Length: 164
Length: 164
Image 1 (cartoon, one colour):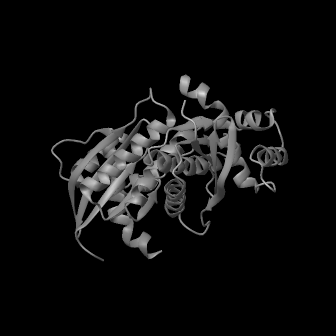
Image 2: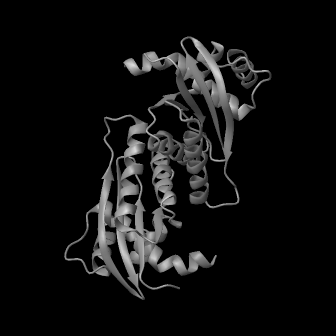
Image 3: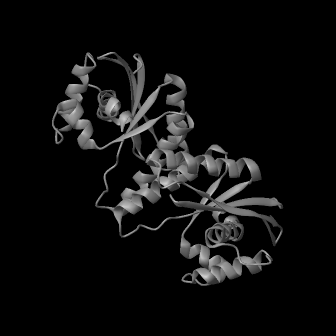
């Protein structure tokens, strides 16, 4: 398996899609960048989808990742919310796929397990462990932390996933 | 309002996304093309999303529509199906938006109302009326018919929609 792998993690959402970029050098992980793409609630759904797609495309063009991991969204109790989230996720995956990135999917449980060692960990624990694993000076913001955690999960899991 | 408008209608789905292209010359509608983009159920979700995105992008590049109409998907009783359909729709909307197309959304009820004059019309009635309105020799296949119906609905509704 190649060393020096750059991984993009995505935490999809219609309002906010978080992203996190890390590098894997052997067993060492290095923080590269993180942030989020926001869509304007005042715009139409197609406009918001376009904003998310363009934003994720820009992240791919800026950081040139080799592979991507994206969080599997849970089915919400509110079907309309599930539908909106699904559409946001579809746009994000399309942006990754257009960038010719191999995309792996992870559940929130798998991500927490990989980062905290406990599938039901609280948000703060995830932020804390992301900070420690990437040797950051302070915990990343919640949106970015989940995306970075997804990237870390992919770094740990890819050998297994790609071998399947 | 400009005459000679080329409209792309999309009926989104993860397995099959139908498309239909028509032209509006004044009050006259003309059939240009229709068909569908299929994704392979044996592939991963990201691969299927990529196929749908590329397919819709290709339709946009081939037929150069001026505007697009897309069917609003209904919230399924099965939340997992709703989520999959949402993701397919997000990819299709992203492809339209990347092509700089204005995208309008219509419910199945609005589409049937526009084409058949009755919101609860059967599929066969929609196919029959699409054939008549576009002066086709035979009824279009079901996937394409719904997409063409969506394009016809947009042709009839756009003056109102764009004025909102």
